[in-house]
Image (cartoon, rainbow, N blue to C red):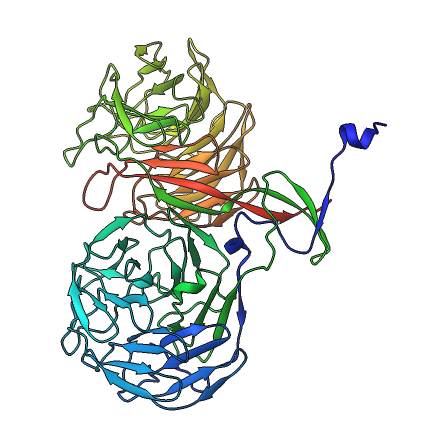
Length: 627
């Protein structure tokens, strides 16, 4: 017999832990026993039930060796040669420690009771420090490093008795994270040239037993962190970004996902690199924050996986709370997308992360405007028919589909443009002009016949930003209520009846809070209202999303070029994961959803950019609250 519950209802599961996409996403760091001596730059090996921590520095290099039994550390036989920034691998009955400063490439083998010097590395006196590596006691690898004050791309392999130099890394680096085995080894992140100001890299390379190949970058650029696992199940954790990091990222063989953070952000710690344990068992031992610490943390995963399902509601009996699985903006990350065919700054975009359009912009240092238009299919950009008039710094209906949008305003010198062109998916058509020509305007809208321009500037010599706002209905422009604060080079997000205008340049040095404002205004279809401010004021940001959920990223004032990213929840802004490439992303932001935004091109520190970055929100569990 049918019941209403069977016909129309659904079952709410009662679970002991949160749902997750994979067993690794259930992972978390927990405190283990503290080292007897606080120190950093340790060579670690083993796993959470039996680990070793050899040498390191307390300010001076040491020979100390401590062994872990799953709950506490015991000092035991010292290593023969003091050093720091070396590597360790293996187990507490078959361990290997190699390299470090000032050990001149020395390698020592541990049998559970004594250390024995074995074959030296091929490196010189300082070349074997700050490398990345992994493997086992009889088959280990090392790559990169710090020869003196420089960077290395050298790599070598240990076969159980001697080291052999193999093909170089593609990227010079020191202090990367490593994991894997000699026929499938990974080197991730680290510091790269130029000197004297090294920069962090997110570059990842994999070794197949003969050569190195670049693969997917980590989400957070960093160095001097930890790594563990293998080719299909690896993690990296901690490090410098340049501040101490607690982030953990999981590698599934094709992409990186942020998982549970360390309890204590730190770097230069010992790490266990056990390839047989994959990403389910690791340790981070001691380190710097920047003072030396004795903290030990253990990474473990749940014994049972409750599979995540977007939109599900369940009761977590451990937390005594109902929860829902949804796509979260704050947990999102940036990843590289396909490059534009023509680098440009001051372009305007619309569409989605898998079906986007970008038009106009400056193509170089000469600030030459272009009419080029490109469309994106989620992988690559294709040039399509040009605008009728070359221009830059115009606006577009950002939340419109890429087959039905409108471009307006801009700056084909010497004056601000009032031009309007409608795109039907294949061609641009000139239509009726704006009431006030402008550039640097906030723009939003949801089709080629539904758009709005708010603020901007009316000419190169104009001393003041505009508050003027007007709407496009598919045939003509109509002036509507102004912004409360005049401004230019501020992004917009949303549709004609519900949108926000974010930050911008007020052109007033005495403006409350500063010329480059943090003020945000919300549009309800009739008027603008001031709502929650950004955490960091600025202009030339990109945006994606809606009136109630948006992201604002990049920027070029007051700081020249930034990677900053903030998320809006309809009430307040939260700083979240930064972009990889600093850029002036104004109006080139694409995305009808804050969980699937994109930045295409923009102005970079040294040139206009072709680089595309895609922001993707993470699927996460949140507690249901009633009010």
